[in-house]
Length: 313
Image (cartoon, rainbow, N blue to C red; front, side, top):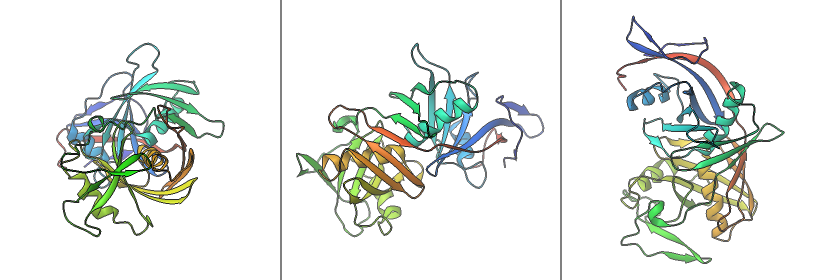
């Protein structure tokens, strides 16, 4: 079991007495979506999937929805790269709330003094900008609708036309009420299925979320968003995330929900998104325009933890 202390630093070191790796970390959160952030700008720590899972464990590790690794620039014109691992240990493509925390982290650690930085993720380059009020705006790039790029396999399904777009009828693995649900499909660099609900407080997030994720139509899994439209400028949202379960907020999920709402003719171009963890603002002008997301990013604490070479969990 990991021992956490308040001593700071960026070097990973071996402790001879328990064969553990001692790693310095920063705990951060963006609208309640929480992260363990690691500085790998001077070299990769080399964590295994099990060790990432240990870090994310809320009982045995630090506890987080995702682990973010800050890494050096991979190419000219790009300031940093970063890797994202879910609390289940798997690496994923994108995390909008994590991107805001990324910029706050590199500025607070003195790794840059820029207000605008470019960051390479696994499948895209993001532009992050610090606002005068301390919030961070992320250029999430354009949404992806091509089903094979989401990826989503529509075999055997017939789309339902809506406002020159479509929803897709899905039957969850274990039937709930309703037995058939209609979802909007979009990628924000990671796959999303968005459901419209009357009230997010009573939506079956914890049952239908994992049921939809297990469907064969999503070969790489999917983040499942439950969206309540309050008015044309405001929604409430809960997201059951791939590899993490329900989180207090999901940045890419907020963007996917707003894009879906705009495509379905329900929302205007700028929308306030209320999550259980806080508020985000998402704007999209349509077409090939980038989706812009603005929200908070906060450092919670810093410390170090001894990570076993072979965690039990």
